Image 1 (cartoon, chains in turn brown, yellow):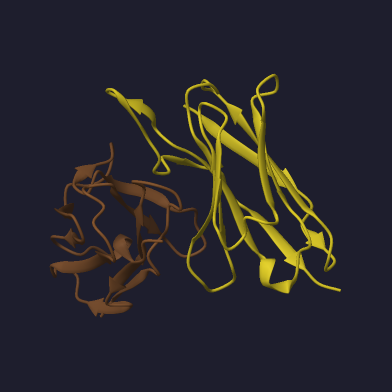
Image 2 (cartoon, chains in turn cyan, yellow):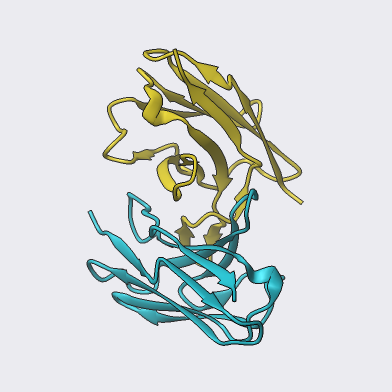
Length: 107
Length: 123
């Protein structure tokens, strides 16, 4: 089965900073990758699908890129409400594996 | 706006069967993929399995021998059963819906989520 590895596992950045999270697949998955945001104690929320398509209602400071095995989630200007754990997920085929998560905190 | 309402027993003893149901309100039931995901305390998300628009199922290989996902289209509900539970199955369990068919293809990311059900396995 294809594994997803996120890096870093956690990060701390200042408000207004550009934040980048990476998700690497052990085999190519084309662009069948989604990103989710899970705030503390809350339900996960879809941010991006098809590697780079922003879900309706998601702020434009979030963006995604990549194809094949290497993917990136970028927050262009970190805001206090972005404190959360972010997960990538592959959905090209079952099992629809999640990455292990990246916890984002404010410095 | 589609909503998923889920319920089931929150406390189980080892070896019992976990049973959860997710009801769909405010949207169509047919034409979508319905999934279950879980999250152990303090850990990440784990995909459990799905039942597709065609009724076919896929399961996480690590759970496949113990998992059954089914639908009741007459009630707009789908269910999860996980047999022979142990403490390792303690988690928040989420139901979720995919986006269905976009263009010519079906897609299987999780677009809509239920609020989660906490299940604890303890003797």
